[in-house]
Length: 270
Image 1 (tube, one colour):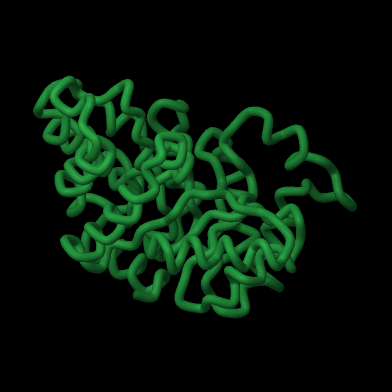
Image 2: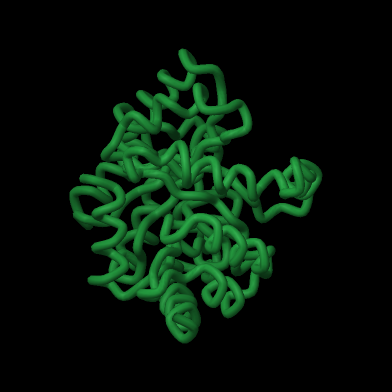
């Protein structure tokens, strides 16, 4: 699966910019799943099966699996997406960043061990630290640019030669690193002005936009500022608001209702 092709197909065929983030916290699982050895897999599988027709991608966050020694369940989950819902790309949210030789191993981990179609990475160690991902031309490389957390401004808003650091990153990725056309950028919905600025700097490069839902990002401003002329270009991620909308055995059905409402709210502004 070529990540960018699959993403564009999903935007068009499913008429959606919604990305469902998978941040499984067993402490918040419904009672009937607690104590099961495969609880993380079963919880996420149910969410995936309930929302697959509503999303352009899924985004499991690796720390939520690794913290519970559930990497095997993450592997199984990504296999399930590819088998049961072919064409929906999976982004491994890992935010990796390290020297080249280590980055090569992280690329093997993301794309060969876990079978992800894209990975999030930290560009702040420079080009050689992300080259192993960029060289996988069929895989997506989604680089941190203007993150959704308040502390991101500590560094990303620094002035570098008359521009903000996040603006420099956006230009660097769009103009120099995107030789294989497989790059995207992370820009938080909590900063809609910066979403619009990154869009202006990068043309039609896809943007992964976390921060709606529990973090309070503005959907309308995000879509207005970040959409491309054809009304796509965004992967707008919601995790906790969808995952934990229901606490009973019908949790997946309730999650679907919230995902439907979020998708409608996004499409209202496209």
